[in-house]
Amino acid sequence: MELNKLDVISTFIYNIILYNIPLLYGTVGEIVVEKSGSLNLGVEGIMAVGAIFGYIVGCYTNSLLVGIVTAFAMGALMGLLFAALTVSLQANQNITGLTLTTFGLGVYFFVGNAIKAVRWPVMGDYANIKNGFADLHIPFLSDIPVIGRGLFSHNILVYLGIIIAFAMWYYLNRTTPGLRLRAIGENPGSADSVGINIKRYKYLHICLGCGIMGIGGYYMGLNMSGSFNSACWINGYGWIAVALVIFANWNPAAAILGTFVFGFFNTLRVSGSSLAIAFPEVLGWLAKVPTQLYQALPFIITALVLFFSSISKRKGSGLPAALGLNYFREER
Image (cartoon, rainbow, N blue to C red):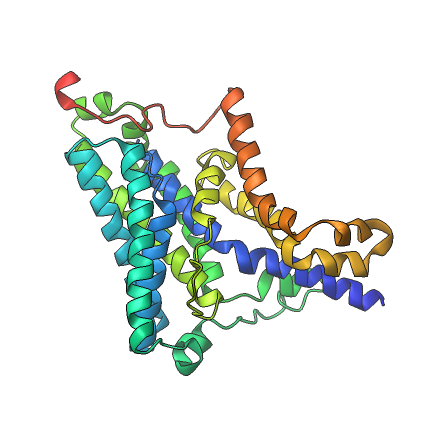
């Protein structure tokens, strides 16, 4: 019985990471975009576009790497559209982001239904995709009791997401281009006055951040075995990622912890009953919680994060001072 309890805990930890790592991609990508001073609310649509094109192209070429590159490229293309509208044409960032969400979801269903009408690529038919997304066994680490499987037996995209998070933290805090980007997000006028090309930096980093979001969407498609139906693969994760940016205080490394915390509540939906059976004395009450509450819980937590962040003034906040404000050089 004790072994079964340990297995339940291990599986719970495993599922937290397996099902919620796309939040890390979306959050880190949005942090990069927001550090440039641009507020992009189109994460949901960008992830959807990256998901559908990454999956289809990846399957047709039978290459996980091609799928990743395609997802990144399509996400970056959506970012280029956002940058063109908000940086060059000075469109309202909030409205543009919401429009990208609607547009991205429309593209997702249009392309998906068109391909499905001809022949939908089944993930199991493409060995390189299926095997490339399989869990990797890390010697010694994967064999650690309880946490070994939960933390160190995942597919390559899980570790890629963590590497990207730490790489973006290092880039933003330890490199000259990263520090210049942060300066643009804080005061674009001052950055412009010392010769930093505001438009170039914004374009490059908006595309970079959106490309990272696209990879997160591709992960979700693969994690659902490419099963295309009436529901979008992204399923609201893009909106949660926007809130996670605040939770992580605009810190890509802290986004890893934020993903785990949000993932904990999200995973209760699929593992709550198992925990209740394994630990009836302590967690038996989980079995009595309505399924609908589990489904709504991540969004409730998201709303609470937004509420408390709006009424509190955190010391040392990473919020870029010029976030959401279009930069008019003539007004400098």
